[in-house]
Length: 81
Image (cartoon, rainbow, N blue to C red; front, top):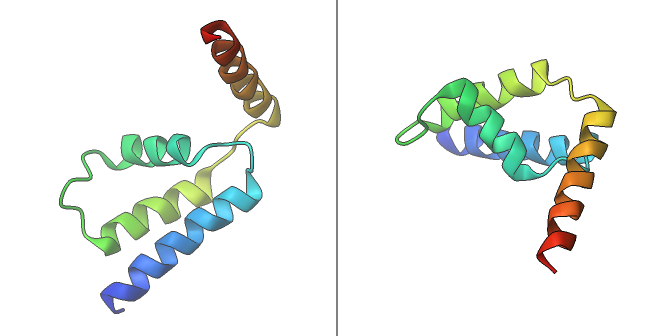
């Protein structure tokens, strides 16, 4: 598969994550992927694609957990005001 295909497919998987879990931030997804894959510096597009694909196939986020995360973020924001 061409390098560009790996890149495009990885971006599309991230877009699908947003559709399937709209309250989970991209940062949270990426951090979880990074934790699973380790250091991502110098990782090829194909390897990153595999890591994201593995994450997508194993993600099991509890909807209540999503709500709790949003609550804590809002609570922290209010405290800063």
